[in-house]
Length: 437
Ligand SMILES: NC(=O)c1ccc[n+]([C@@H]2O[C@H](COP(=O)([O-])OP(=O)(O)OC[C@H]3O[C@@H](n4cnc5c(N)ncnc54)[C@H](O)[C@@H]3O)[C@@H](O)[C@H]2O)c1
Image 1 (cartoon, rainbow, N blue to C red):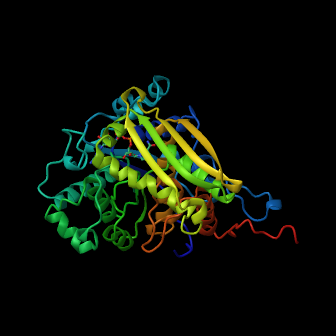
Image 2 (image 1 turned 90 degrees about the vertical axis):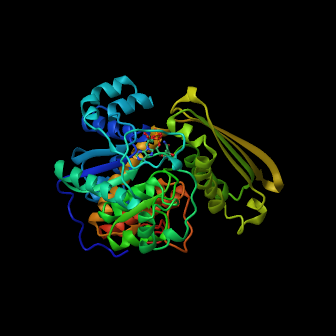
Image 3 (image 1 turned 30 degrees about the horizontal axis):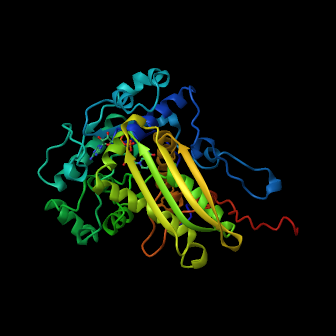
């Protein structure tokens, strides 16, 4: 990445385009509307609440992130979405049962005006859902064109100066990248011939990349994590990020595992199980869709604990992840972890974590931060995979040949250092020589 000479100001309105108007999207949109009216606080959002230390600790320079870099204002966000169900954002939020009426009633007017555009939906990638609010085009290439028209129309009608997209649609069935995903040309041919390894989310991502609209992928499906899309992102100067929002159990894992490793404690087993009852849980109840999630969740410990570097500590780690669909819980998931750790002289110990979390409450601020940071990245002239946004993902996308960084604290340092670097401030390595000056 080249250091930006200047970053364009966030003039005008920013279109926020959301494929998937379900629990996460509606919780995000409602939260922004509530925060705009100062009716609730945007907890969990780095862009709204975080600070960055600049210079030496004695300098006392700790601006808010929003004071350091030019981010779009919440008041300038204009929301659009696609879904295979025609419900508007108020109806979808009511159905999702994440936020209560105390909050929803206060932003009902805004939410009711957000009606989804017709979805690109080939049902074979999400077998548990059947919707009627879908586009009818002959080929996948025609679907890309139809989405591009939607984007252009939305931006013009709402008088936006630019757009960002965040995939908040359902998790799709597991797909390995194949020949069609290797180059722009092979992918475009695949679109014309309705290649079965091109899923719905890839069609959205392709349309956005063609339009130069920054795109983040909140689900574990490939979407744009393949060479052709990365090449197109570079060609169209579009920043991209993914995949799979880091919330709930995986967030806990990336908090705890670096701590065990820092103290050279061994880990022999990590069993994680969840119950959840929202539509996401219903989709993940299908083994093909669960496989996509499983792959995304399993990679985390391997990379943080580095069993090849520390074979005595982590060489025999048994890691298992389960997700169980249990309707009574709705969006209020419960995630249990049993962690078998080993201390001095090989003595075993156990840790039990019971996280009664709310999935969409954890995911919504991530959608906001990704929206604002991707828009910033675009105005700063960045393109391709934005590794500094790995902080937000279970399975971070990286440039080819590199391994992803999963440790939340290293990810945060990278994010903040990127912000410092963007505006020409010194990077902070925590190796300062305050003690020797
Ligand atoms: N909530 C979290 O903590 C969390 C964490 C990581 C990842 N995710 C992922 O985020 C995504 C959204 O989660 P959610 O809880 O909001 O799920 P949800 O089921 O409530 O919402 C998903 C919406 O996407 C729609 N959809 C599916 N395919 C579509 C398509 N092709 N075009 C347009 N719309 C489509 C569905 O109709 C649904 O309304 C899921 O993939 C989930 O795995 C969520």
